[in-house]
Length: 212
Image 1: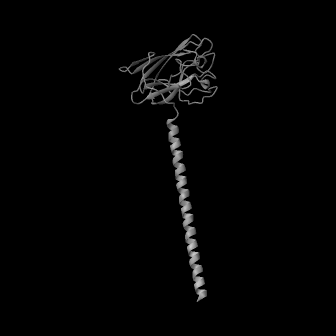
Image 2: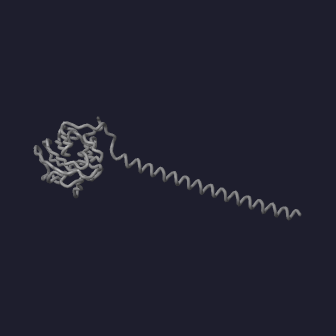
Image 3: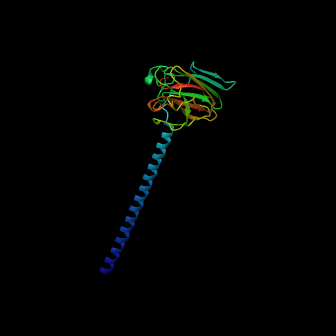
């Protein structure tokens, strides 16, 4: 009788231990699954945050004196000057550099940019590009956002817009998106000669700066 009871007890203990062990493994697997899902959620949140974090916070949108807008004809004309101030050693557009300003034009508008180089020491250029920072020291080719959105000879120092000279570009901003205005002359964009250039799908137009 004692042997039977002992054997029964052993079997009961074995079954109980197996059940406890199985439950612990299931709990571990569930916890592992929960942690995996949480990590995946954090990665997705980080990715979503990164998508909206490519451009620094800007101030209120306004139309500056150097930008002329004709909504009836859907045209924008702007005067952009390199070396307008000594900011970034003169490597700037209307005093702005290193992404601290955003020009916004509506989708479908015809854009004319009159480019002037007031820098007395260096040639500069202007292009509306799909490239994103960080920029290379030397561009191998131009990645233009729109056909014609580049001053002549923009890639080389001896063919870019020379000190005291001017150039003009005209293009149609036919696709909404976030782009950049940059200088293709070697070493210029990588040291800060660029600002944001956005094309809005809702008709927004003007300039935003990090100081406004």
